[in-house]
Amino acid sequence: MGIGAGVFERLYLIDSAHAGTSWSQTQTLNINGLPFPIPVVITYNVTGRDISIAVNNTVYSNVIQVSATLSSSLIPSDSLATTIYSYYAPKYGLILSRTKINLHYSGIIENINLFISLVSSNLL
Image 1 (tube, rainbow, N blue to C red):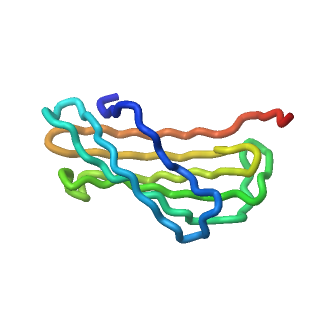
Image 2 (cartoon, rainbow, N blue to C red; image 1 turned 45 degrees about the vertical axis):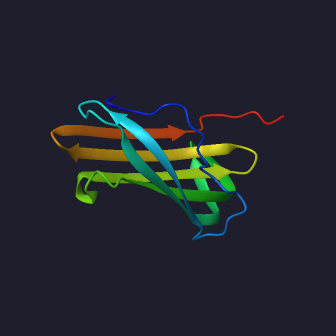
Image 3 (tube, rainbow, N blue to C red; image 1 turned 135 degrees about the vertical axis):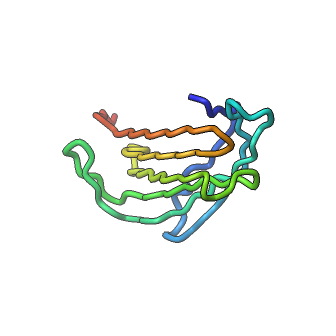
């Protein structure tokens, strides 16, 4: 993959936040083919609360849905498209995540498509 970042702390969930709550973080990414780091703003939004969702034939309740977008002052918005949704269930954490990032900028084409789901768990 041609996009990378160093180690950083990411606040991806505020479990007490109401639907519609947003927050942002700034991160610097290194993209193969560009001679300089790119500042990126990650904007999170609680898009759903107390929803139920089925993942691998298990229904989870009181789930929080968080969407995220990436933007950069150095990359035109029509060159960077993101669709990021994550679902968090009490006692389980992340149960499902869908991430699509399409970067078409300055001769660089990167398409990332990730799907993560909880397969099984054993609560003690």
